Every structure is written in structure tokens, then in C-alpha cells.
Amino acid sequence: MGCSRFILAFLLFCTLAACSSSGVKSSGVDGPAKVVGDNTVESMPDLPDAPDTMGAVSYQPENEYRLGPTDEVAIEVFLVEELSGIYVVDTRGEISMPLLANVKVSGKTIPEVEVLLETLYGHSYLQNPQVSVTVVEYASQQVTVLGSIKQPGIYPLKKRTTLLQVMAMAGGVTRIADQEEIVLFRQDQDGAVYGYLVQLEQIKSGIKKDPIVLANDRIVVPESGTATFMKSFSLGVPGFGGYRQY
Image (tube, rainbow, N blue to C red; front, side):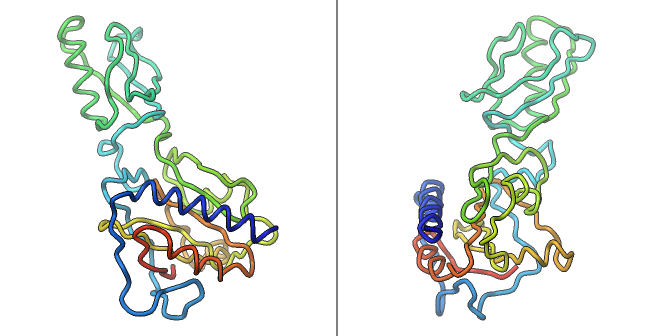
């Protein structure tokens, strides 16, 4: 039953990866395939950044972050309390502002939204308005946690978040989890997906630093003794480029 649950979880991961990587050509790997536990796995001192197009909240200054649906922002119109408040970007990428009705903000940076609101309010209602916008919750950025974890699922990245923090959000690993080779799947700039092998105990003990998790990362916690299944199913991930040791 344990192996069956893990297989189903990993198949779900493959489906999610296929959706997010549609149109990405498989990168291929020179030489033998790199698999969990393979001694040829490349060792990495740190995890790489995600492509800019993924909107990686953890590595972006707030003024470069682009808003998306379900993000929450605090908007302050200087000296006009009635227009200030907390607003949530809806599924259409809009916020409902007093006097302005719906304003499209999805895909815009914070400075761009500030200029937009100043322009709209200044056109008909206020003289030289000053607007400041701050992100309260980065809810449009998400990470997927699967496998031998107590509460598998999709979790929002609301701020700079580490791997251990994500694991805690998901309730922690189960008693039968393999903490020696947790796999963090991340897509690189060329569209290839790599599985970064992480030894959880090394992070907990401080031997290695707790890596930052980025938007669209997928974390798979294998059960003990299921490395064989990882070797088989990971090769079906679109654009899969192999494993690398963190």
C-alpha cells in the first residue's frame, strides 16, 4: 500500500510537470542517466535560481515582483484614507478600487501599479496623488509537496521560504520517509527539469544551509526503499535532465 501511494503521488507530479512544461523539448543527458543514489550525480554547493519567467518570489526585490491572482496588497493614497486599504487581486487579475472600479494589475510590478493608480486618480479625482503599494501576501506563488509527507499538497509562498519551512507547512515527513534523498525538482533557464537530491538531516544539523524554495518547485519525499520507483518515473518528466546532489 505504501509503494502504491507513492507511485500515485509521483504520477500526479508527472502530470503537473507536463502541464507546466508543455512545449518544452526534452534536454537529454550525455552519458548514463543520473538516478537517485548514483555516484555520478553532480554535487552542487547551492541550488540554482529559477528562470525569470517563473516569477520566483524568493529572489526578487519587491519592486521587480509581478502581481498575480490571489496576491494581497496594501495600497495607501497619501492623505486620502478613504481610498487606502488592503486589496486582493481577483482571478481576472484585477483589484476593485474606490472611484475607479476594477483596475487590471496582474503582470505589473509594484512601481507600475503605483504609477497606474496615480494616473487614474489624477486624471479625474485628485491633484498630484501619491500612491504607495506594498505586497502583503505573495499568494500567487506556489510550491508542490508530494510523497511520504503528512499533508501533501500545493502551498503558497507568501514570503522568502526555505525547504525546512515548506516541510513544516506540510506537517513534516512520515515515519517511513527516506530523509536521505528528498528530491526538489526545478526547471532551469533552458526548460530542462533537474532533481536536486537533498539530505534533510544535513540541513537540520547545519552541515548544509537550508535552501530557498522558489515558485513552481516540486518537492518529492520518497518512502524508504522506493528509489527504484524514482529512477523509473522521473525519466517520464518532460524535459528531465537528471539528478544533482545538493
